Length: 114
Length: 111
Image (tube, rainbow over the protein chains, first blue to last red):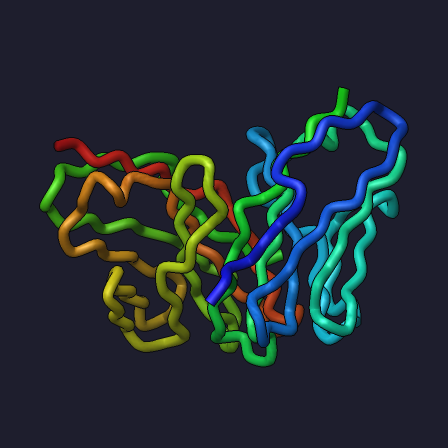
């Protein structure tokens, strides 16, 4: 079956702009999580959605937001981009009901803010 | 947030076993221990997870200490393709199972 798909793979934006990233989970998976990866901070949890509801949120400013649609696809939005938002943004999907399920990650969207 | 502590890097020879340690002294009774690895230019990949008992799968084994404050990922025969950053992660029961990644251990495998 198809894996987790993230689009676009690469993106270049200017400071102050906003950006929307998309994640299509594995069919049947209802949980989608987002992570930011930078060389300095490593992998940091942004938020998790399950059945269209945000179930968990990390310690990121309100400029970072997300949503999940009824088909489990998810988008994350970053407004008023800053240079420090340059990172690899990873999405992971899982069945989501139990803690003991594995998460499947996409290849990420590489965002560069100039 | 519950934290895990891992060595920054380890080295192994091809075809030899590798033991990757992880300390998680603040683990609570219902938190699962997960291991993921990340190959260059890819997203993390699930390796194994467990709660209390040792676990085996086709990729690796997970040995969990009796007090659950530490665990060890065992790769039985390292290959060059196992060179990656290995993350030991706690899945937090009281926070809906979100994964908190540490800095991970960068494993290099020498031929």
